[in-house]
Image 1 (cartoon, rainbow, N blue to C red):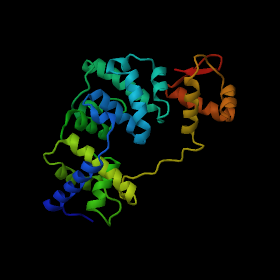
Image 2: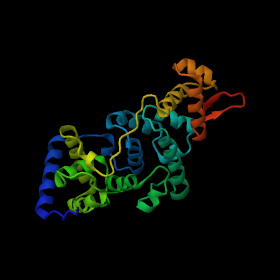
Image 3: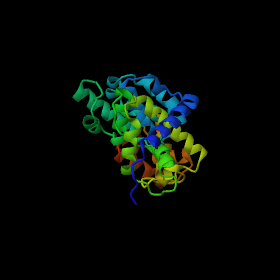
Image 4: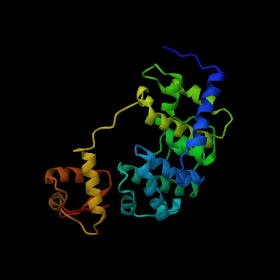
Length: 277
């Protein structure tokens, strides 16, 4: 079922609602206080699949430890993993470090300012690339994430399910208009977040909505436990010792260790002991 583009009055009404909410309830985050492309890239990678409240202290600590692209690119992998602990999805930490290496090698340490160049960076997808363009460079690009979906679906598709992003794109483009993309998307995300808290989450009616797999008992949970334990150790340890310390079975811990080894997080010594890579 196709939907005709809304009349300009509907777009103006939507803009008014978003900006009025932001004026009264706009949120303050440290990454909103900077235009440093590196700091904004760090925040966007951290915010992938992670609640904002968990990101704020880790973001500030991470930038204190790695304040520049060069400091991250020349860091030890184990240092980055330790700094990332508590955020989950640890592959993002290694991808961010590889992205820093790429930026130093190919761009002299300056975060690129085109979508094509940003998409080459490890761990950077379409949304992250466009978010960096909007928030660091104030470029008029079409950003779509869960809060933005919630805002547009709530207003323009109130009785529809399975709304596709391609249906949202012309609305997002029209609503952006000539406004500052940086300021507009901050307001829009806050509005969408508020809608999700006060209404049945509109973004669940997106055709692209997926539920996160259960964390309890998962390999992801075990990987996180192992990395947290190893991050406090300078010497290799055995799977059996780790299992006893974490209250898990040795086979399950060994499976997590092998998985982390394949992904480059840990290294297995010849004696069967493991440590952070």
